[in-house]
Image 1 (cartoon, rainbow, N blue to C red):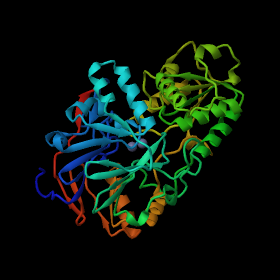
Image 2 (cartoon, rainbow, N blue to C red):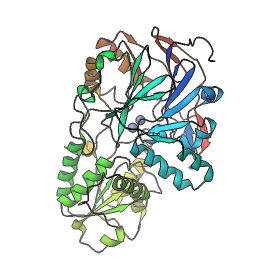
Image 3 (tube, rainbow, N blue to C red):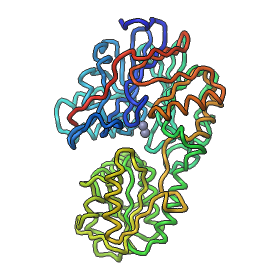
Image 4 (tube, protein in one colour):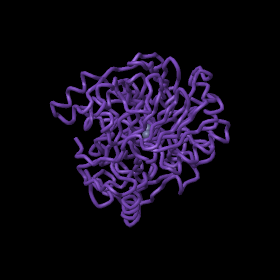
Length: 455
Ligand SMILES: [Zn+2]
Ligand SMILES: [Zn+2]
């Protein structure tokens, strides 16, 4: 069915998003004339600045190849609930309407997104979601796929073990090693993944932090950093972070409790995620939440606000607060804002503007680079973690994904130094033959980014 050079018994990896760019991930595996899609993500900014999305638009991968061969697509399998992995599903699913496999948390995030649209056509997606258990093999066409829990910056993140009769792939998804992730099982070494490492032939791996030496910081260290920082503050404290990091939200709520502050939540994204965490039993019952109105008349040093807007979004809570009153809260010179988040490339101007507005009010702005302790941690592996994975698995082939060209190049160079024989490096739209022999076919299909109205 597929054009040459695809052979029936071969095993192939075809990235259509995320390999050569930061921001959205969509991958296809091919075997015996069948396909399975791994993740279906979106992004809000073109890293090359070619596409210029307006506020109601976003960017998705080019799925022309999948649409052309939609009869061969068996399923979409999802690694975790971040937008760069699930963000394009509503916009694209009707072009290739197949089953979606996800763990409970990812499925619930997707379900609530669908419910929020209130559009009947998206309801079809709901009936196609299959909730998977981890470490259980699922036969999906010619592939046997298991979800292997990893630590990352949202709940229920998984690597995928993709087995065929001739070849086994570990598709890492987004991961890090975290001995104390606050929520979910700790993964302090690759051995904790419980893989039959010797049976893995290829590793397709996250390159986000391949340029960074050392290891990522644990979520528990961030909890301690936040506690120290909040304990020193005299007035009100506002903490901003990504809503999808439920461990971080629990840490912030625990910090509020430990430092004698009432936690007020501002922003729908947090309310939605905390509601999911409560529904699925992740939210500790003793951590209480309040509205801005409920804490309005409390002494300043008894309040901690959790606010949206870490990326400088002007309509988010922190943006509004920086410009004046929001929900009856006026910031003043005794207040502290803690950025418990990274600056996503492309948002620097908006974030700098936000910080300038806050500083002009006399508000103290704190982030990792201005502190001696960590108030944010990346969810991706740095070089020591990557090395530990390759030393444990020792695959014959590795392919770096989830990164811009510089990340992929460094990742492949390091893997080669660590003894991996075939490091195949390419870009979206290139075809990688994993079996019978490792081979890279550039420009197999087109993979330009596509601008769409967001659903
Ligand atoms: Zn992620
Ligand atoms: Zn990601």
